[in-house]
Amino acid sequence: MKYQSQKVAYAYFLVAMALFAIQVLGGLLAGWIYISPNTLSELLPFNIIRMLHTNALIVWLLLGFFGAAYYLVPEESERELFSTKLAYIQLAILVVGTLGAVVSYLVGIHGGREFLEQPLWVKFGILVAAVIFLVNISLTVLAGRKTAITNILLMGLWLLCLLWVFAFINPDNLSLDKMYWWFVVHLWVEATWELVMAAILGYLMLKMTGVDREVVEKWLYVIVATALFSGILGTGHHFFWIGTPGYWQWIGSIFSVFEVIPFFAMMSFAFVMVWKGRKNHPNKAALLWSLGASTVAFFGAGVWGFLHTLHGVNFYTHGTQITAAHGHLAFYGAYVAMNLAMFTYAMPQLRGRAPYNQVLNMASFWLMTGGMCFMTFVLTFAGTIQTHMQRIVGDYYMEVQDQLGLFYMMRFGAGVAVVLGALLFIYSQLVVRRELIAPGPVTTPGE
Image (tube, rainbow, N blue to C red; front, side):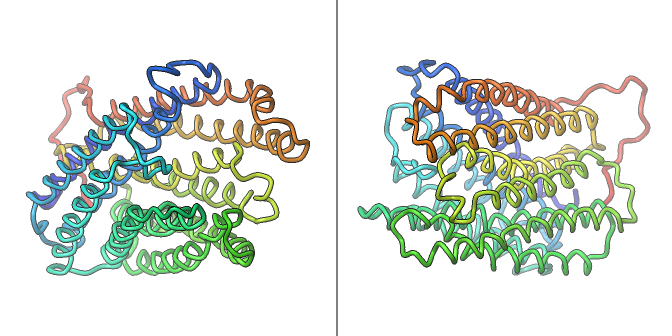
């Protein structure tokens, strides 16, 4: 670690990992309710549990992005952060907003819009925190060295924060409501977040492989161009059946096909950088997470997304467990695993020691990734049966759900593996095991 202000990232990573634990435990509870529907039905209804699961996911991923920015921007800009005080104020606002949202959900106060259920005051708090972040990071970058990594990261984070404004627009017309809703949800996860992911991946590859910066930058610009080209009009695959004009079926279908390209490019980029790399970096776990994130993102967001993005297929599959299969693997690969890669790389340096507990960390990768892949396969099979029975044969929804019990039990088992992997990851990051043999001088890993 070169700059003192990078220590701000440590606080962000700690809060993010705490919410990560809450998110996966909430998901496990939700999975169990699919098997035993009356579990906690009066004390903690399913819709509240699902809100906590999805909102915790979004918030901890954003905290991971913000922490990653506060860690890598000083190194890339070759200067300290503009203000560490502003960074801590931003974190405090986000923590208070998160706690306020949770309390509101538990007492039945929420906006009712999936992912955007936060009460109005919490939305404003998030907006204030976003403005603080943009000011802090932008002034740091403008005063220092400009690189492709900081340019792309800044573009992604500016767009991410600006798109949040659409969360305040809630028209009475349901079609308009859904259009603005997707401006936030889709243009976050299938456009601007991809830029953040690409910037973080580029930074990690630069540090761990030793490949020339010029090579990394060329790859990044290709990834960004394809992500924005496909992602913006690819929003149309959410407009198929919400009352918008029919031409969106063709626009959405065509540009959604191209959405596979940036994820394939990111996977190829990661493996080519490692292949060309000259370094033997000591942090093997961070390298594993980086390669794993890009690979699983390609299959989850790219391949599984393509499975049901064409409007002729989506007519039958939308809203089934196939959607859940795609969503889980895509979020895990593209953003969860990428954040965990950054945590794995940065935490040893933030704590001033060589990479530690790497075997446990890598074991957590295989547990989580294996569990998530099995969950995806199970939900894909469940969704295929659901599509046929419900949308083709015409059986009632609840009758079909009764037939999917075995798949939900297997999904729960996969969820147990994911939770164990997540807890093992957190343990490997925060608990330092004693050396059995007295080590030599501890040195911070080089770039």
